[in-house]
Structure formats: structure tokens, C-alpha cells
Amino acid sequence: MDVTPAWRKSRFCNGNSACVEFARLADGNVALRDSKEQDGPVLVFTPEEWDAFTLGVRAGEFDIDTLAVGA
Image 1 (cartoon, rainbow, N blue to C red):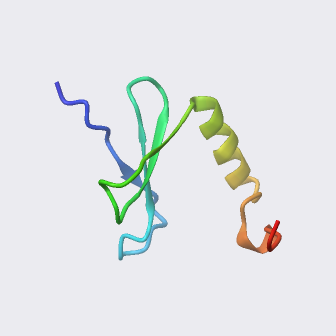
Image 2 (spheres, rainbow, N blue to C red):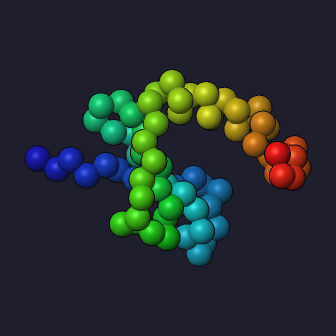
């Protein structure tokens, strides 16, 4: 049985693989990794954490222009 997660990239990634990849895990959690270092560290989020993050992204909470320098 193959338990390797199906990694996906955003359709907004540029062509040089400078991106992050995410995968839904069998336990419902979501994994996130750097696409350039596929054997590197992986962050794992609960469904609730992932939902909070993606809602914040959609609301513009993480836009570079809105982030305070040194905060």
C-alpha cells in the first residue's frame, strides 16, 4: 500500500519551482514543504489550523504590503 502523500503546488507558482507544496494526509492533517527541498522538513497542520491559515490568506491578512516591518 502506497502511503506517500500526493503533493500539490499552487497554480500561481512560477516555473522555477520557487514554491511550496501541500498534501492532505490520511489522518486529515495537511502537510506543507518547500518544493525546492523535497527531502527537507515538513510542517503539519490540523484541519482547523489549515482552515484558519487559508481564511487569513483569502482575507489578505498575510499580504506583504500589510505586514509591519520588525513586528
